[in-house]
Length: 53
Image 1: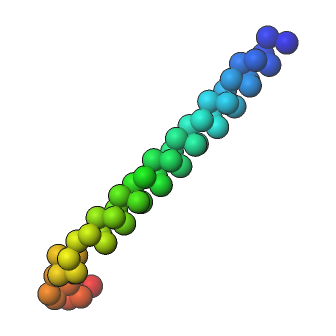
Image 2: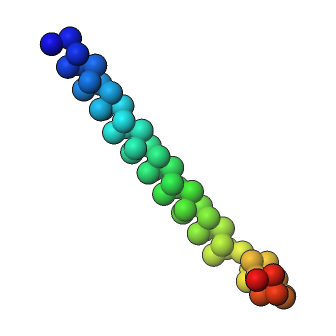
């Protein structure tokens, strides 16, 4: 029985880590979206940007 609590603890830690990573990714995406929406179009897409492709 002593192995059971440590296994449950590991599973709980993995679940918390996944939740934290998902939360950080959501915050990063929201911040990037906010920044892009707030920026002027010529700042995001300067003249001639398509020539880099």
